[in-house]
Length: 407
Image (cartoon, rainbow, N blue to C red):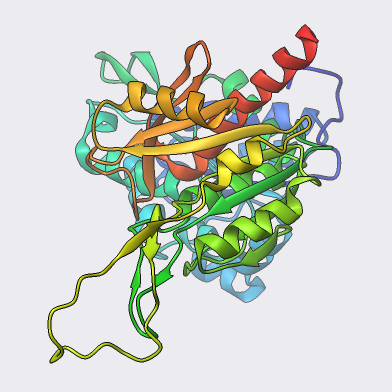
């Protein structure tokens, strides 16, 4: 964010400072933000005031510094600051601050403000003694990332204790870049019309029973949300899920593979990119009973028939659309995904091993490999599905740009 001054004019930012020796670095961050035209309100924890005087932040920000929940209660600062803010940044964020944010505690002004805010939140941890690598701290950071919080990870180097390790507050230029990205979201998908499928399908056995799978729809919904936030028009065709529709996304609810196929076929000509994240049933009962099958009846054989291969059918109808499939596998991940990509005539396929601990169906996390016709183009480690969605979109965008350039 080192361009011309005034890039943040009109932006209201709450800068939270917690009790770390790195609190003095927040002074430089404040000066840079004010220099870019931002309106900064500083909230300090009681511990932070032991490292840097609130007067320093007050003079540089031009606003009184808030430190006490009860003193601020008369003005309801935990609500008014939260409602007015475009962004909340806590730098430095101690291990204690991370824990309170992750657990939703509200025992001081800063923690209460975080709970009340609905704007983006950036946490920049700083801590000593190997604390960042502790499993509890990592679990808190992971939980926060899963909720969409940006964690600007600490850097490795000399610490206040004299040790060398990972725990130094990220450099100011890194913090400024994270702030810039949050306030100036990428619109690199503007002009694209994205058709996303998500969730399972349900194939009826009788009026109360059906064949389905373990898909929660979370990955497809995350992709739809990410594409919309990056400027695309998005239509989400969803099987049965309990997920809220992402803001700005048109959602068409379906139940069976046949219904999903019909909706996707009707919208396919409109789209520029199809991302088939749904776990469509491969088989359905050949006959659906009109009445509930009784348990006392003689054991019956359930005769199945294959469902339509939606993606392969659409591939045969495409004009210039980019087709992206998903492959959930339990073994031989890359070979199986490559075979599926070739057989269905896809541009890219996102392959994930559902046997990886902490990933796959129903989880907030996932890991995947994005594969093109020449092999793996992106190997994405375990991360929150919302973050993974952006990485998948990055790979699709790179493919689209490279394909356009070669034409």
